[in-house]
Image (cartoon, rainbow, N blue to C red; front, top):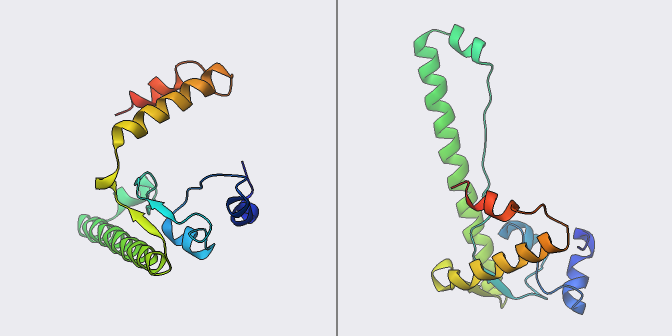
Length: 141
């Protein structure tokens, strides 16, 4: 593991082979310069959550509850659309600067699944993960 502040240099010198983060963070840190392959695994998702005390919410008139629920949903859609637009813009900028974007449709997911499984089994064998954790996670579907 490498500290974020040292990641550009570590990628540039071959200390690490790859890194992962959201496209806006990769672009801001210019990680696409030493590691020019952007592989779109879609394993990171930005989200927004709005929380409200249930007793307070239930105490409001139904019309206020409806307005709040509708507004919260609209805020979520706005946030998601904004994140997608920013993501697309960052990917486009990195491509313009020489990066290669490999879309999810271009990936061989079977190979990624097999490599993930092998890595998880190694972590279990070495005692970094409890036995069975990979299967527990996989069963969460």
